[in-house]
Image (cartoon, rainbow, N blue to C red; front, side):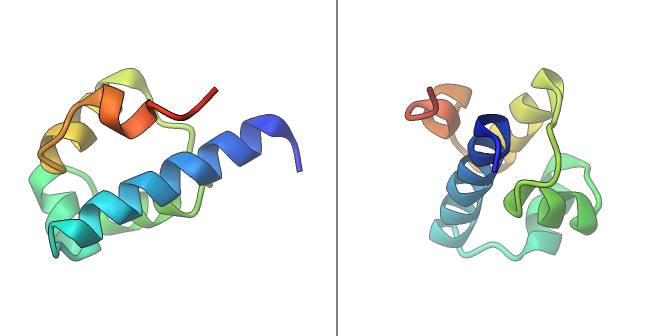
Length: 74
């Protein structure tokens, strides 16, 4: 597995942890962000490399900020 793929999987794990901490379903998070549920699923599984603007929307939907979602990714 490539390093980039590992980073996407790790990011997806962080997103999932934040979503579960808020007790949100993928559908609820998707609605909060203006995304489709399948898009959230792809992010959480590390299968999407999302844009900066979508990371902003995701952070807002997760009631956090970008730095919290990316702080341990190097």
